[in-house]
Length: 387
Image (cartoon, rainbow, N blue to C red; front, top):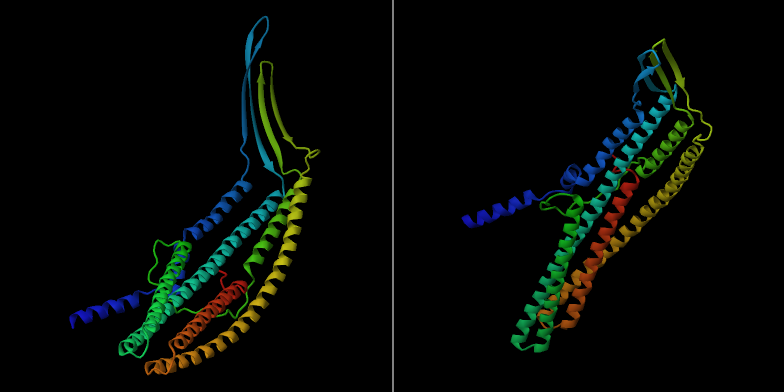
């Protein structure tokens, strides 16, 4: 009695320990090194913007001179200080440019997070499907072993030839091999999911989670990212409109034996040969390119969304008819099993019905997987995974 209670407690502990997909996803989003690395892009963008915005350092020059003539030797000195100054208006253009680059970086980080959720969800669906196929193979093995046992009883009773019994044993061996192959697939899907999640280990994961279509609609991050690139390119072009961004303010004091000299002046670069014309043209071309890419992405997503909606409707109808077919085959199999026990049914007919039912079940599992994949892609397109 005590042993049974211990086994029951362990079983219940295993059920409690099973992790839901929501918990697993939340943990992956929090601990994934890949996402953490992407989040550092924001800090990198801030540092790059600080570099763009910072002022140039001043320059100090010190000189000592010696004046020699036939009567005396005297010394003089010179001190000069210069400071580059940013022209009025350039600072605002730089601020607009850094704001645009920061927005682009933030949008990129959000896009990577949404794509991570989509890929994690798709890998989870693959794992769930592999788990169902493994369970189906185990159930099919049980049916084959049941038929084998009936065949053995009939062989020992002398109602069937030994070859029929061996055929039933061979069918059980085949199903055992299929079970082993499905287990290999399940393990492979498990470790693909674990590897992508970035977690050290994966707790027992529930396989009953079903994705539901997102009813709302948000701006797709892929379009938002292209729009942010366009704004960055335009702000860069505006910044480059300032052919001269700096001037140099200088002052110096020079003491000579017979005079003292104080100079104050401004050095202004002349934009004669290098007017940044090519840089401005490149920035504007990139902005125009982004506009076309946005238009293309909008059309692509529109077609994709319509295809996903129509595809899911067709898949759901096919799943319904497949489920009806499976129920009929299961009922027929039960009748054939009862008939085989009293020698009214041929073994090959029984195995044929069983294999057809298994194929229908496999088809049903594959259809469920495709519908779930369709929903995940639909949710990504409609912005369900936007942060």
